[in-house]
Image (cartoon, rainbow, N blue to C red; front, side):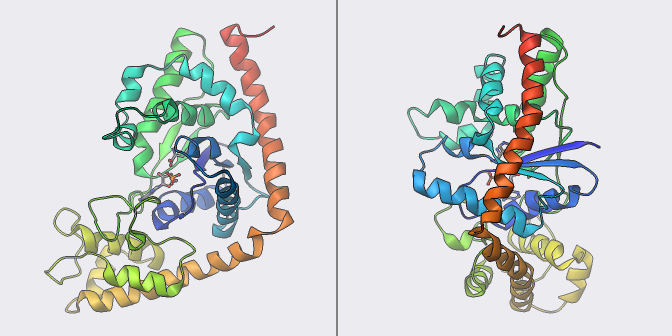
Length: 326
Ligand code: AMP
Ligand code: TRP
């Protein structure tokens, strides 16, 4: 069975972009892959975090994994910092990556923009991500489009080490969906939907109340043509809403276009509200059941043990190949 690894940062506001780009794939892959899903808390501290809130957000994301359908009987679910191998491998990979290639990462460039200096961890963030992936001999990494460059870097570092030191790592592949890999902000379809945008109506968080969902969708930016037609170039706003509609409502773009022929954006948006509210309601319900349960803690403890057992084997091989340790 092929091995799958992915992670989400515990920074609150998990949104439809995270769900449609990544989490949905997590669930789909479980039946015929060996899946490992991580809450990447060490990535979260590349920007300042309130320790109390971070702790809560770790459990929030863990509960959301389970609420969307990740099954701990099939998949390993754990917290990154509970497995020491991530930090250990991170250093070895750091010594085999270059400031030039890290400087080209667009996420770093945008996060450090207009700042005189940035935390070193923000700069080396993709190396820790490579460590996450390579630590488990991962074959497949399900993520949104925004992670493409990071996956490429991971492959470059692994290939470099395989060629110059010794064959050590499995070369992973990214897995990106056709629809949902890049959900845009509702208030500005030129920006991706993000956890950190100041305007709460730019995103739909998975735990939003129906009224908030309604408001955000009804306010969403469209265009003045008033025709429900999929055209990302010229009609990015309505096209983004159509992508959400299509995935959550299980309809093709052509079916949606036909359904709203001769109708305006108002009818379309009203239906999209209903589809979204109905899709998120069971997630919210399961989340509430599990979020404060002892079961959640047990699942994460068990997951960390199982992940650690795999990582220890990889680290022994890595250290041996590099000539490290006794
Ligand atoms: P993050 O919130 O950065 O930890 O991202 C978690 C996962 O969600 C990653 O696989 C991202 O690629 C994915 N993701 C984040 N934002 C979006 C978006 N707007 N559209 C699609 N996928 C996204
Ligand atoms: N960088 C990813 C993001 O922001 C999160 C992440 C960390 C990740 N480590 C990973 C994703 C390993 C996939 C595999 O979305």
